[in-house]
Image 1 (cartoon, rainbow, N blue to C red):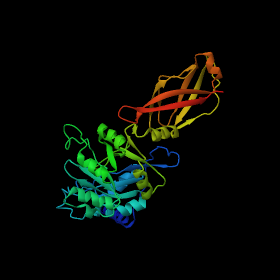
Image 2: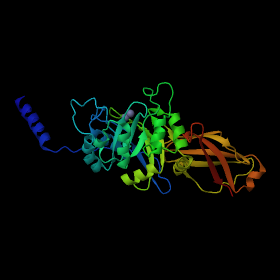
Image 3: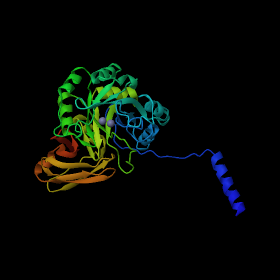
Image 4: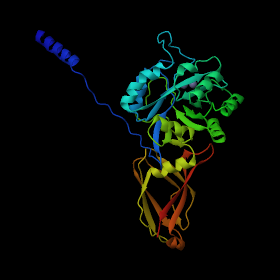
Amino acid sequence: MFMMFFRLFGLLILLFLCEITEAQSRKIINIPDIQGYQTLKCDFHMHTVFSDGTVWPTVRVQEAWQEGLDAISITDHIEYRPHSIDINADHNRSFEIAEPLANELKIILIRGAEITRKMPPGHLNALFINNANLLDRVNVNDALREARDQGAFIVWNHPCWKEQQPDSTVWWKEHTYLLKNNMLHGIEVFNESLCPEALGWAIEKKLTIFGNTDEHGSTNFSSEHRPMTLVFSKSRTQGGIKEALFSRRTVVYFDNSLVGESTYLNQLFFASLEFENVPLRLKNEESKLIFIKNISDINYELELAQPGIGFDAPEKIVLIAHQITSIELNGNSEEVAVMKNLKVYYEVKNLKVSNKDNLVITFSFQNN
Ligand SMILES: [Zn+2]
Ligand SMILES: [Zn+2]
């Protein structure tokens, strides 16, 4: 018994003396790049104990790395700090604590803060600031002007949040003022759920669209993916992201859905797929199979929008993520034998370009 105690004790000492190394894994989010741009996976809205969150800033970086993100911004509230009795620090502190780990893990960490006011104008994230302390102002417009003068990209957060707009979601004259004075550049169209009003305003007023977590606790997306903003950036750098945001090159990704401009959704859709490119030589009353491989994480849900000339194609197709789907085409007239290309049009039900329209894509299969 006595010897066993000593052995155990020795083992414990050994454990303390050795530096314990461990391996961790990072998920890969399979959303392809598009022509000329890298598709960066970003979350621009989250909190730590330095405002009303429950985690330490380095946890945000660790989560981002494990979940396969490229960039995050920690956006602690300027005006709302319920832990301030225990955590008494300035507004730059959460960024400074997270930054060394972000550098080590190659996560792009964008300095940000959430200007937190009642409606109007509500809550706004200032991204790419250089000093959050200077945003601590009595007048909200002074805070936003300061952010703008620091070169910030400013986002209106969660316009659909019931606590601030319980009856209807309204665009206030204060937001028009901000827009005219270069103090409003983007809007969250997804924060917990999709906000149709925000999507409508983004299209109408040319605001950049965002989908963010606004996470306060620890993230729990081990089996799925968190809501995020896909940024089409010329480089995997902070400067690249900033340029892309000001140029409105974003798509919102949540659950199995994408929301954004048709040009980006169309490119993402086709960059996700691989086809065999051999002439089908389809004839009347014959059938041929097309094989489509989907290399992305998204299940594309297609519904026939307009049939092809001289052949029948399936009414509904699901191109399942990381699988090959076969599609049968059936010749239904003599005309088909002379067609150079077989064109068929599908609506992609889970790719949204506006509140009422989904993306429509064209398949063009080589025939002769
Ligand atoms: Zn907020
Ligand atoms: Zn927030």
